[in-house]
Length: 160
Image 1 (cartoon, one colour):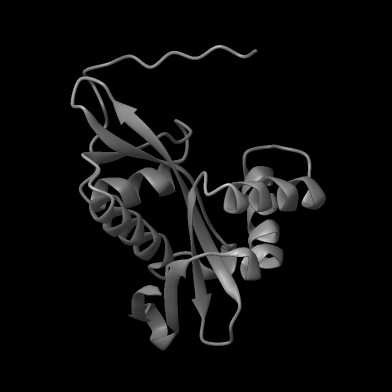
Image 2 (tube, rainbow, N blue to C red):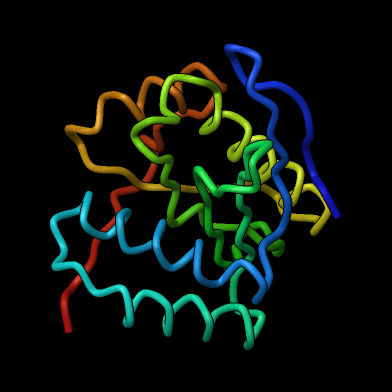
């Protein structure tokens, strides 16, 4: 089902919906471009396999924005996580990407709104995300939509 439908800016119509295997080719292209944005080597075949595995195993929720011509212009992917302290689920908004020609048209905001609607429908206590420190464009969108930088905890990682 369509989560959000309407106009983006400049009279362009769109729909945001949960992606499925029918969207695999377009999702793989978007996911590969997203990875390249984060300085990864292009790998369309690997991107396709990764997305296909997530959809088949129902390990993530992926939302896609389609324009009125049926072309996908952006996506977001969320993964489930749990908060032991709050004893509730949290969804991690792990990936969000909009094609360059569709940026500054409200697409990212619609994807984020779809993620929020999804989280609420799943009974989650909240959503979390991380972005590059220098990704000022994304940060301005998150700030404008009411997201807050987490200051209470330091997040660590290790590469295995």
